Amino acid sequence: MTDNKRTVLTIIVDETELAGEMPLYEAVVRKLVRLEIAGATVNMGIMGFGRHGKVHRKRLFGVADERPVTIVAIDRDEAIRRALPELRAMMPEGLIYLSEAEVA
Image 1: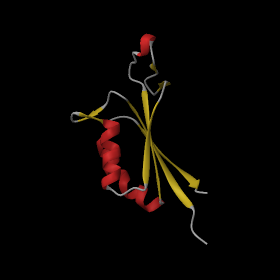
Image 2: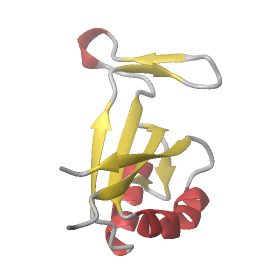
Image 3: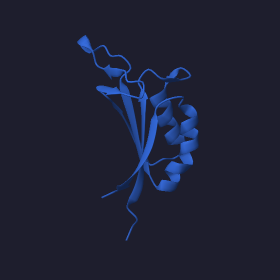
Image 4: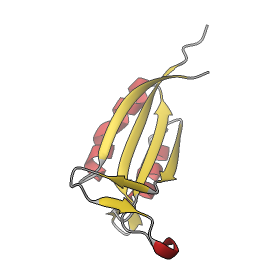
């Protein structure tokens, strides 16, 4: 019987945040690849708000302000926790949270 328990890492940032000249979400995914995390996906939000209370959304003609971007990665708990310090160091703001998952 195999162990099908995994940890899901979710990171939420603004689409305009940068890591150097690269979008932060792209830098995070590239870091996850280097850290050999099993997989990650980036999703663009259509609307959201954070602790500052400012609503971000897609506007007329597709022009958007700082929409939320969600990065979701999944791997064994020890791999995700090993990556956390490096990911936190990349993010001046944003939200990182972990949850448990059972992979079918």
